[in-house]
Amino acid sequence: MKLKHNFKNLKVWQKSVDLAVKVYHMTATFPSEEKFGMTSQMRRSSVSIPSNIAEGSARNTSRAFTNCLDISLGESFELETQTIIAHRVGLLDQELFDSMNQDIDEIQKMIIGFKFSVESNPY
Image 1 (cartoon, rainbow, N blue to C red):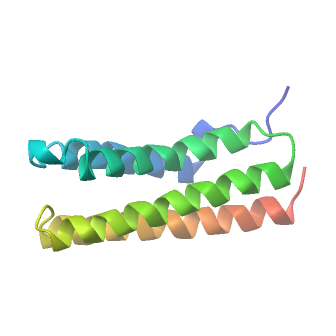
Image 2 (image 1 turned 135 degrees about the vertical axis):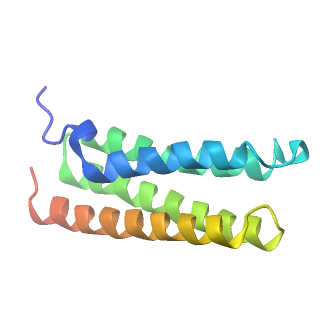
Image 3 (image 1 turned 90 degrees about the vertical axis):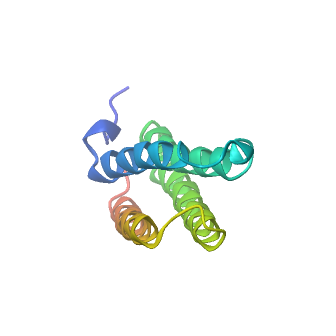
């Protein structure tokens, strides 16, 4: 089967992988008591963003792909919420919080734009 989108070439996938790596590095500094709490939640949601983009690229219809993009977008909002909470409880300093928000916002806009593109150009 020939895929319409090679996910590894998608800028939104590349940036979301970079974000997941950033989350892994960032959460490595969290206290050990957060291992099964905030650390686990943030890592899971950050990994889900590019994973759902990749999964969608293997789908046979635009509708199925956009569904995966919707899930990816939802995971990005989940990560954004977790970032806000981590900042409020003192796990993230202002500089890292601002950097994370900027990255998440950019990825959210890219997912929304890509979803519109896929919907406008069905396979």
